[in-house]
Amino acid sequence: EMIMGKNFDTFFEQVFNETLRFEGGIVNDKNDIGKLTYKGISKYFNPKWDGWEIIEPALVGYDLENKDHRTIINKKLSEDKNLEKRIMNFYYNAFWKGILDKIKYANLSSNLFDFSVNSGIGRSTRFLQKILGVKVDGDLGPATWGDIDAYVLKNSEMDLLIRLNLERCKFYLSRVELKPKQAAFLYGWLLRTITLHKKFYNGSYKILIGFINQMYGTYTMIYIKILKILKGIILIYII
Image (cartoon, rainbow, N blue to C red; front, top):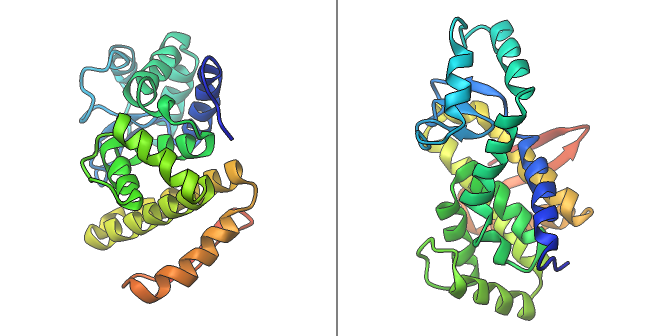
């Protein structure tokens, strides 16, 4: 499906809302490299974001280790319409405008957006470029937009999306292998990947599972033998 021109603003809002469902409220997890984070925006990586001037005063007198305190803070922050606007503006300007909105394919751009929010746009672009078989430089610009068009014309958007989300799952698994303390996040990472793939591609996540079994079971050290959603639970067996 192709979404172009003025329709992209409306489409961004849809994509933004889908991704924000997976981004939590206020957290300061010692095992998360982002440290203090709100709605997926890390203060460590984005110290100059104007949303912090609203968030930080709201934290005074509260202990983020306390679940009840976090509930109170999140309720207070979620009611701030000015903060909500700043969150959307951040994601629109950092990931979408002039970058992902130049991709003609709705399913691909929406999944790339989520991958970029979760792991960085440079990383998601490098994975994409690797699949496209072009120079891997992390720059999602005119050259890569054209490479995407050429790939989809020769193959299909679904083929590209399956390969991208497969690489995304493998990345998360390798990340936990290197940093075992991040295993607590693995379920969430995989859940959002497969859930969004399923939502935007009406069941082709079954093709993703089959592709994993067929193509990557033989050639990789990490083999995802079963990867499916069953009552909201991802079952993973790694050999």
